[in-house]
Length: 227
Image 1 (cartoon, rainbow, N blue to C red):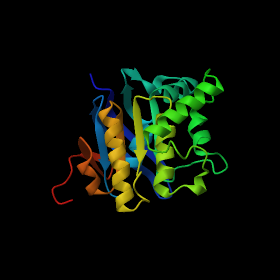
Image 2 (tube, one colour; image 1 turned 135 degrees about the vertical axis):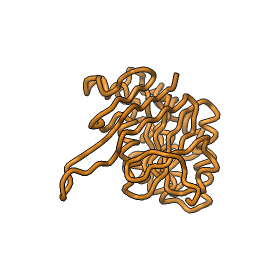
Image 3 (cartoon, one colour; image 1 turned 90 degrees about the vertical axis):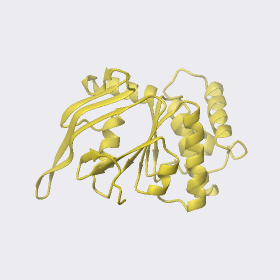
Image 4 (cartoon, rainbow, N blue to C red; image 1 turned 45 degrees about the vertical axis):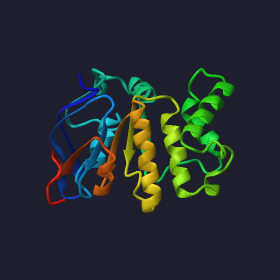
């Protein structure tokens, strides 16, 4: 059984010129341990789909099953619990708290757990070691390079040991060398069993993923030959 199963998902919203259809009857199955790329031009619906998969934005129609749980049938409180247990997010702009150190930023998702402060620090340090920042635990974000800030964001996304990480254009603001380092890190984490779903517009990133799908005008399909 697929870890994520999307059936008949559509998404519409009210725009300035009337109803806008962001997604049209999307069907998608994602297996546990996949590294999947969602590709498509700007405005194609890929970020909308990512937010629906991440239990952030309910679809207008259709169902989303994650680990056989109909996530949008849950109450908003249970959805929040589900996100904390199952998913991590990496955003293009990192969204680090500027006045918190690297380790304090990574500890944030653990604040609502019953773990002691010592246990939280140990878990945060462990994942920062894993992403290569074990020597920079107490640096503020403005004391880190863009690639290092991205690694802190990844550490924060995986510190609570989620089953799935969603990454929205994680290499978009990085130079090519730093982007490759980031994708190597994702590949390593994926090899350890983490399921990763990444929105990207860069076809060069496909060299790192196990599968890719393409969205154009809200319709899901294979990668075009002329991409």
